[in-house]
Amino acid sequence: MSAVEILSDEFDIEDILDFTHHKFQKWARHSVPFSAAWEVTNACNLRCKYCGLSSGNALSNELSLEEAFDVIEDISQAGTHSLMLLGGEPLVRSDVLEIVGYASLFMSVGINTNGLLLDEEFANKLKTAGINQVKVSLDGPKSHDVMRGTGTYEKALRALKACKNAGIFTIIEMTVSRLNYNEVPAVVNLAMRLGAAVVVNEFIPFGRGEKYPELMLSREERKRMQEFLLERKKLYGEWRIAFEDRYIISEDAALLKMVADPFCNAVNVGCNAGIFAYGITPDGKVLPCPTLRLTVGDLRERSLKDIWKDSEALKTLRSRELKGKCGRCELRYVCGGCRGRTYAFTNDILAEDPLCWYEPALGGGCFGGRAEMDS
Image (tube, rainbow, N blue to C red; front, side, top):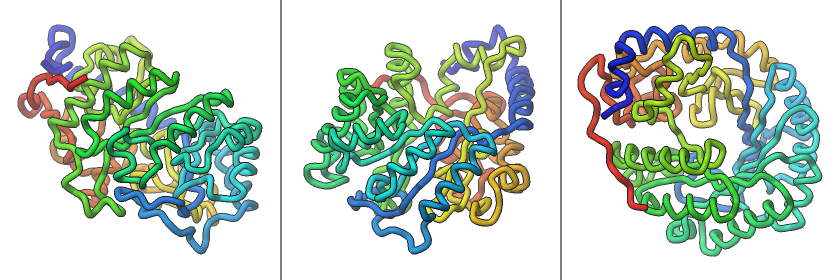
């Protein structure tokens, strides 16, 4: 039974749509670029088979250190308080500690790494520079080396332990495909044993991953996995487990009840691309999010504040005037689908999300029933 059905005695379907629309509009009108994901280089010391950016060599026009400092000041003035440094592999950039150190004067800074260069010494340098968190890519004991290279799993474990020993908040970042779908429980358990958090992302077949479309999860697998992760999140705590959880609000009656209640301050806008979050490419281009590869501005030419205010694409995303199934869904203001993945598949930022399992109650019954994932 879906969350909408569970709450049917308390909320009409139209009420859910109206109440969440009101909250969404309030937050969209006062949109702030709070969280940034910055690809500081395209260079990488691995050639992962499903890399969405086909990372390898540095771009010829990547931001210099001086330009990086300018960008940090600019995005801070625009309202950015949280910055995640990505790649490529950010640690191959020789001045990454200087970037971390300067950014940490203005905002919370994290880094996402494959862990190959992250030993005890480098972890301590990151801590001294002011890093707040480190995400280490780890896809499971069986599949990690298959997709990323022989010996990389053990080096990822070493990096996780080095960061824990340095007193850095540590996160396992797992990319899930059909290759390692059944390893999700094992990776969650590993994170809990290490005292780390875990973030679960889904494989999308673009970049180098275009060769492996068959590895993308089915709707049923996606639903089963997200139900499992929601249960573990309730068990271990909100901060310990995160995943691309827009769709799961269709199953989470407790959350939906809070965000639909007009007298409750709880708000959930679902996909926050261009609303609270954005991405920066190695050469300073601005994206609505790292997955949504649509340039909306250039930090070498304009301030983030002006880009955020003037971009027509960002205004379109904040309208949430979606098409197809998403456009008639009562949950569109608390979900909205994944605009990045939708754009990758359809070249339309407002199109129906082709990966969602939920069938709107306003337009038919819900997809399937609850399923269980092997634990």
